[in-house]
Image 1 (spheres, rainbow, N blue to C red):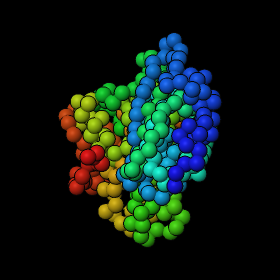
Image 2 (cartoon, rainbow, N blue to C red):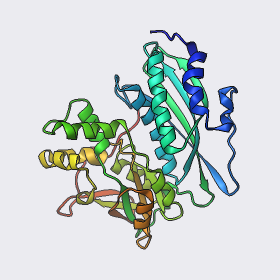
Image 3 (cartoon, helix red, strand yellow):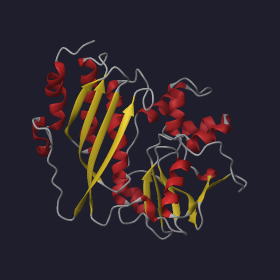
Image 4 (tube, rainbow, N blue to C red):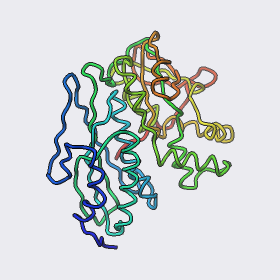
Length: 325
């Protein structure tokens, strides 16, 4: 269905209101935006794209698609201890995305802009004969010297994760009818975790200057810890019995033990994975972030990541995490 409003009508009605809180957006009347960074702050920039059928399901509600798009990028800001400033967005939409679809999509963005304190700065809108393709470039700021990278883990550090692990990957299975034996409430909970990540911005900011290495979990716990260990030049050991699990995931694993591999490697958690010295006050960071934090392992000299089972032996995994392309 073609748009009755047209490209500029859509921008005026649905997108300009998303930029109202950002003076640097210039009312979306120019081809670029202005970003002022206070003295002593460093600009943090990240970009992520979502493609229909790859990162979200065909038929997912437009408002949830918009919110997931923004939240994936906010999670990347959290993973460098940054707070949000604004974002650019590109939409490549097929003709079936009518004005009502865009209106609901923009409403989802508006809800999360209000929650997370970020505004639209600009972007582009084009048509495509292919699947819905969306991209956001998000900007944040962090006090210079308090940013946390992936490469700082050291032998003796403790490995931590926020929230619960595995809900995103299990949620994809739930949303596509591939989980059995769960009651509808648990299936709905897991599907919601897949469709609507929880970026840990307050925790990320609290970890600035405290965590030795930090990233978010998008491609699976083991695979992402592999990345962190590799760039830090260390090895990591985690205990599968210490993974923090939601009640829904706990119920499922009691019936399907083999789903532990999905929990460890499936991705879409968007929780924070970080390392810190044993004497770091992580409890205070957890309280400041308003989210539980769990120690799941340690950093050692060497290379690679080992996952221990309940008997202390190595847990074999058919894969390590999600790979793009």
